[in-house]
Amino acid sequence: MALSDLLASDWPAARRLLADLTSVDLRPELPYRLTWSDELSVDPSHEPAWLSHGFLERTS
Image (cartoon, rainbow, N blue to C red; front, side, top):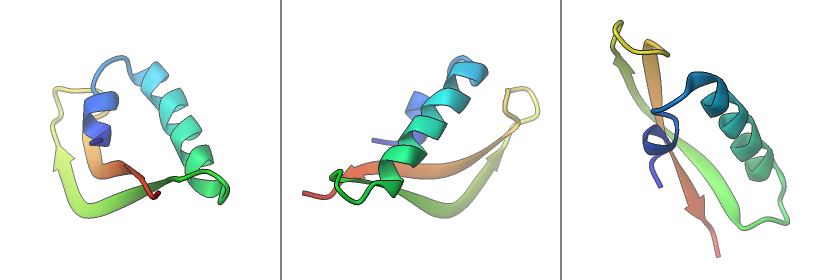
């Protein structure tokens, strides 16, 4: 699942969701990982104004 789809709405809620997903990624007993691309999008009319593209993947 593309993280940009999850983080596109309410930025304070998106920050909490990103913190939760990062926590899931750091727990080796859970079958998920976050992967990040080198791509960065910038749009000053949105909040946040930049977006680093990543994906949440199931590993097993």
